[in-house]
Amino acid sequence: MRSRAYTGLIALSLLAAMLAGCKPENKFIAPPTPEIAVAPPLQQKVTPFIELTGNTAAYNNVDLVARVEGFLVAIDYQDGSPARKGDLLFQIDPSTYEAQVKQAAAQLAAAKAQLVQSTAEFNRQETLLRQNVSAQNTFDIAKAKRDSDAANVQNQEANLTIAQINLSYTKVTAPFDSVTTRHLISVGEVVGNGVNTKLATSVQLDPMYVTFNVSEQDVLNIRANLKDRRLSLEEINKVPLEIGLMTEEGFPHKGHLNYVAPDIDTNTGTILMRGLFENPTLALLPGFFVRVRLPLGLGAKDALLVPDPVIGEDQAGKYLLVVNKDDTVEQRRVTTGMLLPGSLRVIDKGLTADDRVVISTNGRAIPGRKVIPKLTTIAAAAAK
Image (cartoon, rainbow, N blue to C red; front, side, top):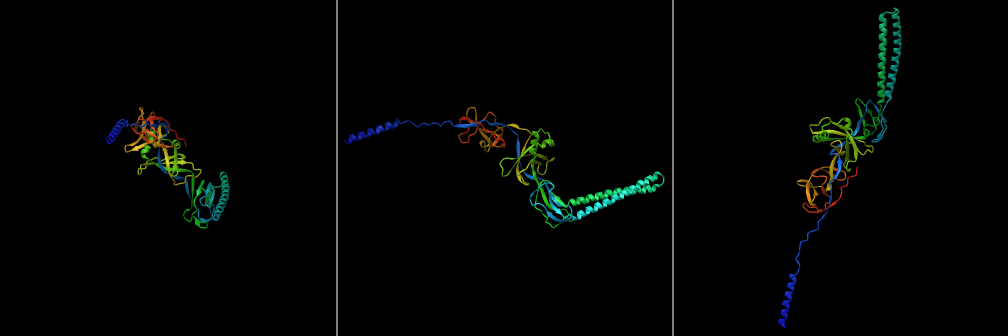
């Protein structure tokens, strides 16, 4: 019995070994070819520009001073309030200057009366001289008296004008539409005592200047784009400018170039430029730091654009992944240009209009790998 059982165990072991030898071998199954979204670069006309930094400055900024001496009797505005051109802001005691006007007017009237009398005497002596009744020297005296009195009338007219001007200086008015700063002198103080006394400052906020400096290299690039043609003043005023504040996205404020300095500052190697911007809501205040976008030339040029996030960068520089005609991913070195609204980046070199740029960034696009390109398009940015 024991021999028969042992024989059965051996048979089962042989059967198990035979079955194990018939099991199929493991084989490598390649992953499916990935689908990759690709798109030709967006072709669009673009005006090349540079981005700079600058500062806002008031269109007009004038210190209000007392031009005549006297007591300040009234302040006719609230500190920081807007004022229209000609609005009364400060009143200096006018009584002394009103009296001087009356005095000058009386002196003028007396001079005119004297001129009437001397003119009549001159006419009489002229008639007598023609009749050989009066001597020549008597006529000359009458003529000199008439001319002297005429000159005195002109002198008294000038004195009256000066007195009227001094009287007008007792009213300090807004020189233009502006905002007036806090007053620096109180009612009852003497102002203009030997020197011009500063009372406050009028600041015009609309429109607003923006000043910035452009490097010598950028100036040369601009001249090259203009084919070394110097812009006229009228053309300069048509060059568009855009600015944005530190807290703003993009460049929402639109204006135009207003001034270009005639020389390069040798200390900084830059040239001063100034822009002019309408500011009806007073969103801009003097002294703000702003980002400035200045075109490098007149007119737009054809450019190729891709979404900025698909551009890669390594130690060798920036690159794009493209799918070639064999549907294989390859790395393409590119030179990038300016960033446009909608996160679209201009590609200056390394790309053609027929290239298929990898748009997806899910890591399945590996240089040298075959892919199934899924064609899509790059959306143009909405105009702002």
